[in-house]
Length: 246
Ligand code: NDP
Image 1 (tube, rainbow, N blue to C red):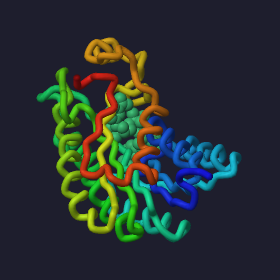
Image 2 (image 1 turned 90 degrees about the vertical axis):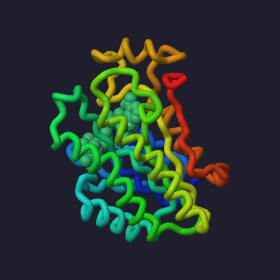
Image 3 (image 1 turned 90 degrees about the horizontal axis):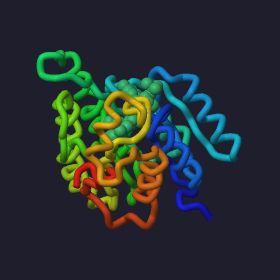
């Protein structure tokens, strides 16, 4: 008996990094998982094959989170394939890094479109296909709470927006028993923030644990929040950061 048996999940941005780990983990707990990607077609298809090889069900859909109608139709086609969407994970995110004079208004608008606007669009659309007791989980960032270096203003702003959006959506969907939560990772070793990158030693110096997180550590937290034991957690901003914010 798997915790997510007969559940259907939709992950925005599941081809690489934290999103791919979430897709894999939800599938390993028995969920059918649809996920989106933009550029990593090969990785997306390889992930589907891996899941199918171990008896799971997965569906990769090309859909740019910056594009409202792409997100809505990706969710509609996943709901058509699976009959419903029990779990929505908003993981797709971008990091436009640069100090005040370096960032352009395109960087600003793109960050808002992907990190914030797509979360609202997907939540609205998925809620239309979501039975009572569903789950909405967004991957925010500890940078909403602590931004200890230069160059991250717009990124931190976008992740702070998720804090308020999560609280409000939890109120809207509470009457249906749908929980809405924000998972705020600290530094996690991915293409976005490699543990051997230029910023890595600085990142480690801010953490109590002095190491990067693994994508699987974020995925297991998301799996818990997706499952039947987490039904009393909602409207919460939950930090999993190795003590970065401590
Ligand atoms: P990566 O850059 O390693 O992977 C990003 C994933 O999101 C890819 O699958 C990518 O797909 C997808 N994606 C990006 N843009 C879009 C888009 N416009 N439409 C659809 N999918 C998109 O990032 P991480 O795994 O590191 O980060 C995942 C989330 O976690 C982000 O929201 C990030 O802000 C957050 N986070 C990450 C931290 C870290 O230290 N790594 C710390 C705190 C939060 P494709 O390859 O097809 O483009």
